[in-house]
Amino acid sequence: MNFCPRCGTALVLRPEGGRPRPMCPAEGCGFTFYGDASIGTGAVVLRGDDVLLIERRTGTRVWWQIPGGFVEVDEPIHTAVEREVLEETGVVARATDVVGFRHAFGQPDRPIANIYVVFRLVAESGDPRPDLEESFAAEFVPRARIAQHEGLSSMSLWAIETALAAPSTGGLSLEPHREGLHRPGHTIFRAPGLGAAQG
Ligand SMILES: [Zn+2]
Image (cartoon, rainbow, N blue to C red; front, side):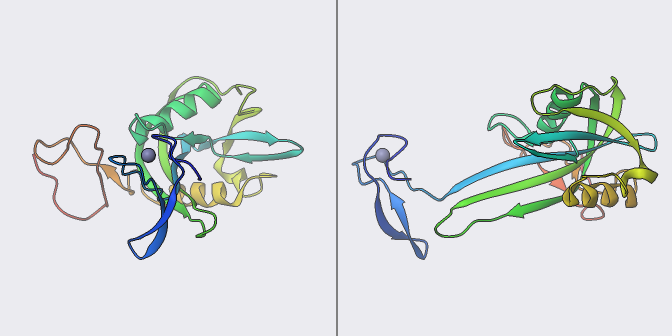
């Protein structure tokens, strides 16, 4: 990043927090570039003993994975994963808990990072169909055939096996709303077996 996204001024390198960072020198702006971080979600959607898979294509590459996508900056993450499933497969599903996440981090000269949070969801209605923009096939696959499914990404296989191995709600669960704890725009997740639910 060379120019301030707020005011357009050329950024300069200044030390902050132990390393030089691009900062905006304009009076009163105060922009500092900490790198590009994004949030993605993946969905292990269960319908009985079946798991929802989609086919993705970019250029000549074709592979299968669980549905999911980027979280918009103005939506809760558990709502985002349900939205992505509906968009990519036509299946209405409800997120129950988090089974794990991946942190993909960058380098000082390539400051791009991503957190990909995998949810477990229960399918409620709808038969799978691809949107033909992001998904080119969508189907429920019996869990016994998942490990042999050709072209399935290793991350998706890990997510599915982790979700299937744990109890139905054994992952991080949404903390019920509590006055004084939650602020507007905050969603909090709790690790299983830790603390006591209040209120
Ligand atoms: Zn600026």
